[in-house]
Amino acid sequence: MKFKISCVALVLAGGLLASSVNAKDQNQTQDRVQDQTQDQLHTQDRMQTQDRLQTQDKLQTQDKLQTQDQLQERDQFKGSELMNAQEREQYQLRLNEAKSDQDRERIRNEYQVKMQERAAKSE
Image (cartoon, rainbow, N blue to C red; front, side, top):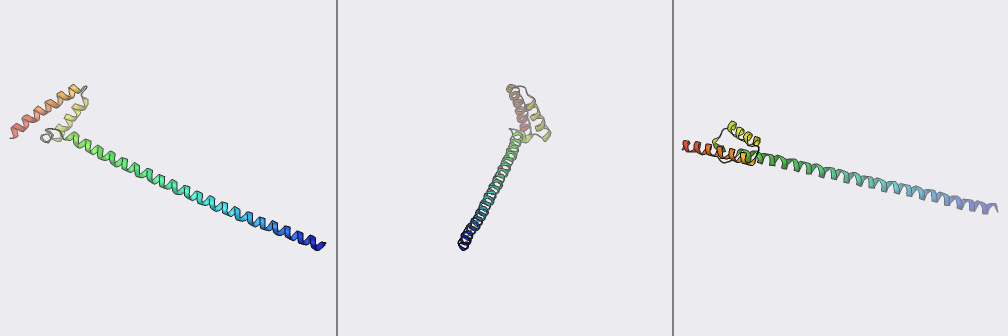
């Protein structure tokens, strides 16, 4: 009888040990899966940050190019090559200070006539 009880106890103990080992393996597997998931999330975050930075760089470059184009357009108007830097600056200042489109048009016409006269003298 003692032998039967010992065998049953051994079987039960073996089952508990197997359950314990199985539970430990499951915990390790869950830990591994969690680690992989966290690694994937970190990788995604890193990639999103890189994409955001690249987009910002592109936008900044586009803004710089657009500003440069605007400055060139501003400085290159009909007759602008006949003006010195101070005259071009004064012209732009007057246009910017003009209160209406009519005032701006009048200023443009004044400078155009002035530059035509200057061009005629230099011929």
